[in-house]
Image (tube, rainbow, N blue to C red; front, side, top):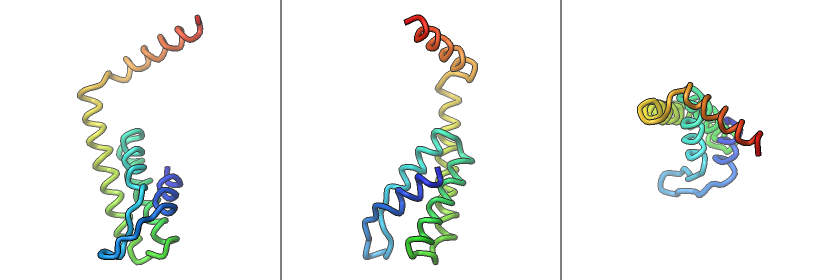
Length: 109
């Protein structure tokens, strides 16, 4: 996940002259990582991938603030998605049961 966030942050940049920064697709990958893998992975991958892109891309001065900000962003998205998932979706045992049913269905066809 760190590598994907790094690539999407580093590869496609749209410079913003007013802030001397840039717009990138890395934030979307942080959201996806946090939603799929939880707040820990979202925070760590978001912070490391974005900070690494800043260091390699010539914005090394912003690497530590980026690490903190993107880490918090990934953690918040992960916590919100975990809370939502626990309230709305099935419990873990229900997913196992559905997966086994789907596996049996594929086996017989």
